[in-house]
Image (cartoon, rainbow, N blue to C red; front, side, top):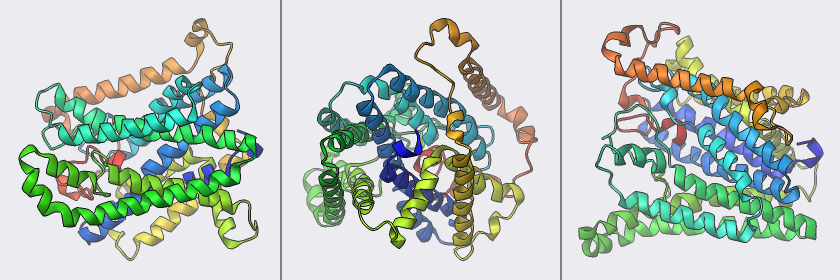
Length: 441
C-alpha cells in the first residue's frame, strides 16, 4: 500500500510484535543461566503471535472492506502464497541449530500459518464485521476446548492433533509439523472483523469512538484474564474434588491459565489478544493527539519496522536463531549481555526496514498475480518454481530422516559444526522437544 493509505496503529503493533518475538527468541540462550528468567521472557514474548495474527487479519479485513474487488482479493492471495512458500524456506532454514539435524524444513513456522490464513482471507470478502467477530471467537473457544479434551492415540490422530491443535505430548517423533492451526483461524477471523469495522467507522466518521471502544475492550479482556488466572489457584481444590474423575478439572484449570499456549487457551487469548486490541485502540487515540510527543515518536519508529514486517522477521530469525551458534559466540549471551544483543537486533531490523521502505521493496513480495491472469499464464509465473522447491526440500529432508543412521554424520556438512549439539533439554521452555518452538517463540 502507498504510505498515505497505511494505518499507523496496524504498522506500529506489527513493529511491537517484532520486538517481542526477539524477546522470546533470545530466551533460548539463557536456559542454562536461569530457567526462571527464560520462562518469564517466553511468557512476555507470547504477546507477539496473537498480536501479529490479529493485525494480519485486520489489514486484510480493512482492504477487503475499503475495496471489495477481484484485484484486492488477488493481491492478498498473492501475498499469502509468497509468505507461505518463500517464507517457509527463509525462516525454516534459520532453524538448523535449533532442531534435530535434518528436520528444519519439516517444522511449521509462523509464516506458514500467516500465509495459509492470507490465502483464505479473500473468501471473507462479503462477510459482515459482526459475523466475523462472533464466528472467530466461537472457532477459537471451541477449538481450544476440544484440544484440551482430546488425547490422540492412533497413528492418524497423533499427527492431526499436532498439525491442527498443537497437541504434542511426546508421542510423536520430533520432526516438526506442530501448530495450533484451528485456534489461529479463530484469532485471524476476529482480526478480519476488526479491520472491516475500522473501515466502516472511518467512513462514518466514528474512528475515534471505535478507538476508545477497542482500548476499553482490550483492557477489560486483560483484566478478565488476570482474574481468571488468579482464581484458578483458589478454585483448584473444589474442581479437583468434583470434576477430576471426568477430566474436566484439568480442562477448566488449563483454560484459565494465561501462559498455556500449546494448545492456546481462553486465558491466553484474552490476555495476549486483549493487549494487542488495547494497543490498537490506544495508538489510534495517540495519533489524534500531539504528534511531537516522545511516545508518538516511539510509535512511529515501531511502525517503520511494522511496514516491513516480513523482511524484519526473516532478519531477526537469522540474527538471533542462527548467527550466534554459527559464529560460536552463543555462550557469551547471558542475562547481562543478551539485552545488548536484543538492542542490536532491534536496530538492525529498523535500518533494514528503513532501506526496504526507501526502495519500496514490499512490491517484490509477490508472485505477480493480476486480475487478468488466467490458468494459461500460471505456467509462466514464479509460483510453480517455488512450489517445486518447497516440495523438493521437504522430500530430501524426509529421505534423510528415513536414512538417518547412515546419513547423520554428514547432514550438516554445508554449515559449520555446532559446538553445542542439539539436545531436547536445551530448548527454552520445552521438556522433551522443539517441534513447536518456531510457532511458540
